[in-house]
Image (cartoon, rainbow, N blue to C red; front, side):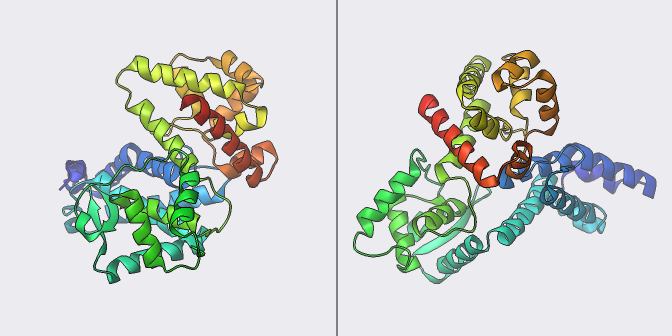
Length: 337
């Protein structure tokens, strides 16, 4: 049993139990929900679970809170079976994210369902849990760790994959089992099932609505990871200085589309990160963004934003936000490597 739940289990009356629940929600649950919604769905809510410009964000936050509260008020025997409470909350949020994506991206969800079914029907194609990740690959790879997929220019390389392995046929109508086998051979090792779904969706031209490209999503994730795993504060500081220098040289639309959405692995927005690192103060941020200090301060309170909120702020469509964000990332990748 997780020691975090001991005070709740040992509470002597309802008032003390309620206090314990509130402390768990504020200290442990809220940060996990906010971070996972931001990282998995690009949905931002404030520390109080508010996003006035995007009802979806608030709805998913409230759903995650409600499910967690239900668990905390459940029979004590259930609580004693929870070995890692924060991981348990993470699974609750992960399931909510899956449900949300299914509702927003039904075609992609059907593809994932078909892939899962395929991996249970073919003896040589399997999936397995490894370090809290669902991996898949050939049966001979079972219970081994994932192969790190080189995501640099991934879409160009996937185009080359199709040209080489499906030169005389339409990959969009080829048997799914064959496409999966060809991708496994091409990757050369186990891969996260969600990454494989994104690859399949790309090569088979499956779309629900416009989304970020594969390599752009991975580029932002990799940059966050590089900063977080930097061997020294000096190295992290240099990476952030490079980032800010490039962001300032972007066009105003590209700069806004990138800066307003960006966050680190802890969910901190770009302005907070730069100020905490001593790279930019309010005046520098205003000059770099081409805005007044008051405008920057106003935006800071709302960041990081999701694409819908950025579109509303810039008075444009989400498609334009995706386009400007894409072009910003292309320039960042070219300079950061």
